[in-house]
Length: 248
Length: 304
Ligand SMILES: Nc1ncnc2c1ncn2[C@@H]1O[C@H](COP(=O)(O)OP(=O)(O)O)[C@@H](O)[C@H]1O
Ligand SMILES: [Mg+2]
Image (cartoon, rainbow over all chains, first blue to last red; front, side, top):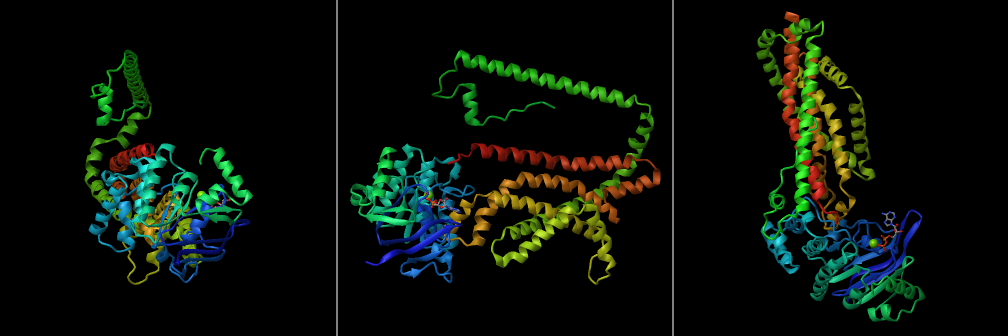
């Protein structure tokens, strides 16, 4: 199996602050990779480099074997093949739920309105929000907004879905409904890279867990190993802090 | 005036106020007392406001009409016969102002938006355009409108270039558009910058190009955020269109001036002034309404 997404030695600095010092990460088709690491360890930065919202300072990101960090590559065309969901939802407040979901399929992918609407309705039904199609985002709860954001990302049939701590802005009782949707999407074979603080969820859903620390992937492997019997002392330290916070 | 107007309650509010909604328990004595007190207090403050306004009006009226110069002021500024005579000409002049207002207003919107977008372009390739737009705004926002009017109105025709318009109507409108576009561009720019960068990131990550993102995601939100400010500028524009009279266009102000020159009675100015006020009142009320609606929407929207 060849990797859908291949991150090779990516370096990223903001001024003097070197956030990524050579990150390697390979994601196969239908695989779910969980990125864990302390706050400020660069999880979001890595995902933003992957979706070309930031330019890398060194290294490569390959999507289906194509080097998308090459400046000659059309960044818009690359982003069309990715789905991104942010911590803060970022739905468009001036558009209805349905318009949020159909925007990219119609405007970017040139699909007909009717076609896009039909699929959007199917997606919204899948996430249990068919009756909210005509609502504006600020009339929805956080959990509902985040589910719409997932539907919006899925509507373009992405090769990889990038999820950046999509439950950390939610009230605890709303986390479950969002994770249920992610679990279902993963079960249907979507390739996913997710930065997360939900270790329990990572354990259940992820095929691989990567621990990001001081700008590199310090440890990676199956969840039972990385989360259960970590080799590195720093991983153990991080996990014990997380356990103290009651998140495992 | 301190008359406080309550927002008319929507359907769901009415139900809870009357306490008759199905499933809602009948209000307790405590709540009934609170409502009675609120009603009493609001009646009392209405009364106080009414009485104080009335007293103030009477004092001003008596003071002005008893002043030694009043009879003379009355005949030179508030002469009914002069007003009647000047009215048709002034009204015809006002029509010219309205035309300048509508045409100029539309041009200002387009030009202002264009300049604002130019000023927000990033990247070294756009540096000249950005600089040009910034220079434009600095120039025309700093220049007094009256001077721009003189320069455009008398300077352009003096060039004697073929095809250049010479009518004071066109030149006056042009000068007003130049000045107001600079203001409106800044309003639009503030609106564009008020849209959180994460909105742009979300749109770009869906594959929308920079231009599509600006047009579909950023500008609609920006315009919505600055509509109250734009309406305020529109009200200002409404009276500034009277300045085209300095170029000799026979608008309401100029018509009044001609009348004054013939009779040496200043009533036509008062008539023209009142007509401008009447013209501005509806837009001012619309501006209030839009601002109030924007406030409500912001309050009702959840943060997360
Ligand atoms: N746009 C930016 N400008 C400057 N510094 C940034 C920017 N984005 C992230 N950083 C810095 O990069 C580091 C990693 O941030 P981030 O990737 O958000 O971490 P995480 O998502 O793992 O919490 C932090 O120290 C943060 O301050
Ligand atoms: Mg983050």
